[in-house]
Image (cartoon, rainbow, N blue to C red; front, side, top):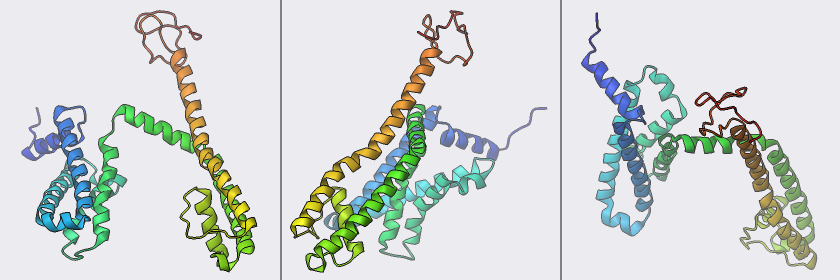
Length: 280
């Protein structure tokens, strides 16, 4: 006998299709609305810090933020209702972000004028990673993640070398320049070294002796190479990954019909029967 679904179950099913169904028209429309509201919310956070604008349109900004907060609150409740294991969502990374995104407006009654609550609202930007879950976007993100993981050993060793260099150079500058030039302690001297090495150059501390200026020149020159090294390490891993993927695609590519998704040991194309050339 066919089981008759209750109105609540039908509602849960429809809500699940709209919220989680990225391949449906309603799901795509929901994601687009959500995307627009997230961007609008972050824009409102920025506009609230503009004093003249906030004074003139304060009521309108608060009203818009309340509308957005109510929408996100309803969405958060629906996400909990329409899934079988709500605890997994509530305590997941995005579940916590979703909750933090709606709390500031409600907490503003108890902590009025807190800038921290304003910053928390900007966390809604992190939800874009969940919305933009396109296969191409996800694939590129995964490739970058794998490249960073593969090169983490080299990057850690490089950062360790930089830290040791900054400590040694900072200590040397403390001895060479002294307190008269602003190098009042070794930590301050290390701070100067980091600022100079990264080519930021605030200019709040500058060497005055010829030897100190010579050391500063060496540090500046080192800075150009140091900035490029981590980028080169990650880029090399990405290029290696692209090369391996290219070989794999080429090895499993059918020259007759163009199909690529063959198993590793395939000798013939599953679509047209053409022999696969491993060296083509």
